[in-house]
Length: 134
Image (cartoon, rainbow, N blue to C red; front, top):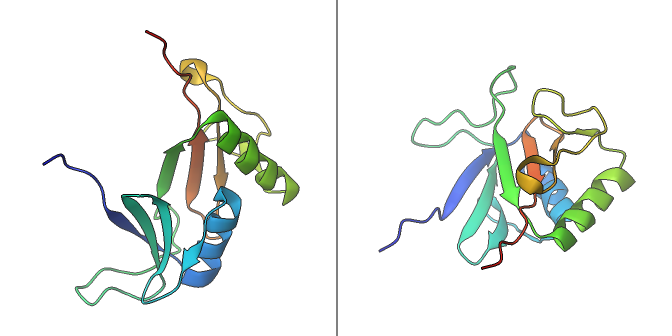
């Protein structure tokens, strides 16, 4: 069997607010429940949580340096749609993870990419990679 990531927990102050922010920008839907779940594709969900995990996980920790980085390869059409929603909301974005409010996009590896923060400090990245032709 091939190994694939099924889901990951995204800590949030307010799970529905965080999941809704993400889902709206990425053009997806929220499935409420114990977690506020956003299906990324047929095999992956982001499960937003705002309570400490029963097994001892910390839940959301707002201290600096505790945010997560979530990076997504997207097609050109998806990039344009997400980027348009980021700009329409006035969300600062940038070309580098350490400078994600410089108003630029990068062109690494022949594609385009940018970074922006969600309302709780997680760094989101979208990037395109040109299709290779054989």
